[in-house]
Image (cartoon, rainbow, N blue to C red; front, side):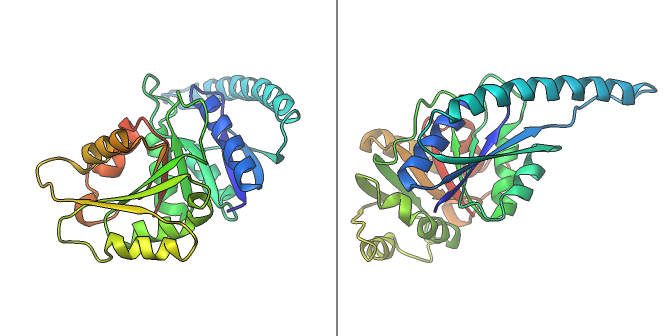
Length: 266
């Protein structure tokens, strides 16, 4: 877990992404790759659409050039290894093209007050296709505490297991790890087995299992995070069982509402 890929784009979530990527790169003693994406403009079609697109794209490129100048000046003062790439196109597609050798991709969950860019959809597309761990943070996050308390939202499915395995280097740095499961009978792997797996990596996790068929899983996860004072959540995305995905499913609701950073895999 040494290669951190950061989406650079001058939106309201950028500062939280930037600080999170720096914190993770330092903690993991890794390398930060900044991918600066200038998205193609969305213009309603008419006879002069080509001229409109060209003008908007020129403005976008000018804005991103200023953003690049400011961020590279800041990065030059940081104590991390970093590199920079530029891309133009659909944000999710550009990230996927750059993510082949990434271990972590730093994005936002949905932005609360700003519909564009649509970060929830971008994060969802990356999760479905990249097979790389995504760190999705609220735009108000001041920093990512890699040495804090990690809550693993466990549903006993393969995506949860794959995400936990991929996150061992991160979980090893956590001050405490807590595995939380809402039992529904669809579990393939018990949380105690997950704890035993982590213990072989020197990570000694607590386990809590509840039976609650009345409340949504994301609500119960949020309540457990507040009760346990978690700093971030590790969970498998778009899985089955209690965390089964459909329209408005758990992963989407977590990406919409979570107050904590989400470390997601698939």
